[in-house]
Structures are given as C-alpha cells and as structure tokens.
Length: 416
Ligand code: SAM
Image (tube, rainbow, N blue to C red; front, side, top):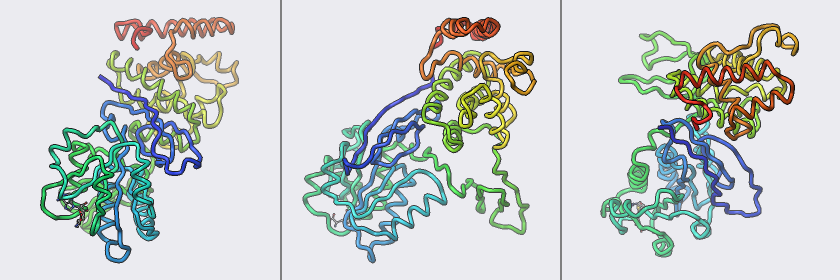
C-alpha cells in the first residue's frame, strides 16, 4: 500500500515579525522560521523524520575550548537526522564550517548561533529533551516520547544550569555514567528515529560517497573523473552529470524547482503522480517510470502554459539527459495525445503525439483525472472538451479511459 501524507505545519518562529513563506515540497527540510507543507511520496520515502522537526540545542559552547566538540555535535546532528542546530554562543566560524560541509555533502541542515536558550525552549512548540546522565533511562523515556511532535534535543558542555532540568519535558540519560554529548546525541537520535536517520537524503552536494568494501569511491557532481583511492591501479570512470537513469521522486521535485516551476505546478504534478502510481500498480506498469514521468510531466510549464508545454518539457528533459522513456511521457502527455493532423493545425511541430507505451498512457490519463490538484471523474473532462467543441479529443479521452480501466480491471473513476 502506498502511503501519502500532506501535512501543513507551522514551526517554531522565534521572531514573529519575520516574513513567513509557504512552500510546497517533498520531504526536504526547511528553515525553521517558515511554514512548510510536506508531500511525502513513494512508499520507500515515507520517513519518520520527514514529518517532524528535530533540532538540537548546544548549551554553553566555549569558542576556543569546545570548537571541536561543538563541531562534532553539529555534524552528528546533521548526519543522524536532525534538521537544525542552535548554539547558544555566537560563533561565525562554526557556522561557516557546518555550512561548508552542507554545501559539499548536500542535504538541508541549518545552523544558528547566538541563541538564547531559555527563549528558544520557552517558544518551542514540541517536546524538549535534555540529555544528562542524571535523567531517566533512555528506554523509559522512549516509551513516553510523542514522536509526532517536533523535538528539541538539548546537550550541555561543562556545567548545565539547574533551570534546564526544570524547563525540559524530559531529562534523559544514556547510561548513568559521564561520557560525551557527541555520543549521547548519536545514541539518542538513532533510537529516536529507530535507525531511520540512515535513509536521510543528502541531495545537492558537490560530492557523494559510494559505500565500498575497500578504498574510497566518491562521485563528483560534474563531468569529472571518479577515482578509487588507488588511482594508478584503477581506471578512471567518467560520471556524467546527465541523468541517464530514472530520477527518484525527491530529485524530480528538485528538478521542477530548479527549472523554475511554480508551487502550483509542483502541487499539480504531485497530485497527478499520486493517481498515476495507483493506476500503474493496478496495471502492472513500471511504477518508478510512471512516478518520475508523472512528477515531471509538466516541467515545460516553467517555460509556457500553452499547448507547447509538452514539447518544451521534452526539450528540457532531453537537455538534462533524462531517459527517452521520460522524454516521451512528457512530450505525449497532453490530453489523450494529439495526432499529427491536429498537431499541424495547432501549430505544433508536425508529428504524432499519441501516447504509445502503457506508462505514457497512464501519465497522460492521470493528468486527465486531475483538475488542478483534485481528482475528477473522466466525465467532467469529457464535458469540458465537448463544451469547447473538441469532439475528437472527447472521444480519445473516453477511449483511453476505457482501455486503461480494462487493463486495471476496474473503472478508473473508482480507483481513488
Ligand atoms: N557535568 C556536566 C553537567 O552538569 O551536566 C556534564 C558535562 S558532559 C561532558 C557534557 C554533556 O554530555 C552533558 O551536558 C550531556 O548532554 C552529555 N552527557 C554526558 N554523559 C551523558 C549521559 N550519561 N547521558 C546523557 N547525556 C550525557
């Protein structure tokens, strides 16, 4: 069963006067001062960490003495699934270091220094967990923590003031022996996320590390050689920046955004994707291809909202080196396809734009079953076509609906 969540959450907003922006996105993380709207897509991508915010608060950072440990706290927070770290002492150097790690290795992670801990804890709308060897056992705390709430995990440096123990909702110990905030944070995040932190996506980085038994394999995002550590013994592999494989849903959303599609277009693409995937599952089609094709079908709307948007989209997809199967889905998604004779009349480059493969048909039709972001019955789309005098188009719509309904074994109007 596919799961999908759409959730609007208003996160901690330390400065209420600050502008609030609304974003539509997949499960990427957003600055804490913003409203975010999640669409979590694909069964493998429904991640626990996607729907709640995890932030870390580092107390009492002493610029010279703690620079290494605080950096490690921030790196652990980023790697183990947190979205943001707050550090009480203003430290521009540490901010720059962490931001540079994010640029290099990717992923959305924020750092803010010079934060007043009491003010932040006071305004925090989720749970506040203070890690201390004096607290309650981790196992006991885990049973009580509500993971649907945002969580602020507080770790100290030297001495932690007694106020923090009072302000925290939970004082949690990772064993009752003194050790380190780095270890305590890592264990807490692993347990809190049930190991799901391992699925966190780190997109947009300059490099990506490929797990290897021996040596180091690193992909550089550009057309540059990829070497194993033992350069001399290994052949240089060229990694093409172009995507020759089917991009995952997160990447598709990123591409839409990168090409300048509006939030409305992205929202529509997600709605089409949701229906297309259901049809694809029933029809025994290539679900991954349908999913990517549906998410990208309107990428051409970054250029035009006219009838040319399919062709423009296909051009963009070609330039990006996307597989031909996706290019064709984009090019042939308009209506129930456009035959060459009509294409000529419409001023399109003369060619047949009728969807051919099962996947092309599914995406084109899922688009017909969505009015903006909402599912609609095919009758509605047919009525619209007839009102405009587009009889042939109405006929093609009905034919495609019947064909796919037959393949799926149910009327597609009842699939949702
Ligand atoms: N003496 C300090 C105090 O008064 O809290 C603790 C200093 S310790 C080096 C720094 C931080 O490591 C603590 O604030 C706590 O966040 C974390 N820490 C160390 N041992 C811990 C444990 N057993 N359980 C949970 N957190 C621990």
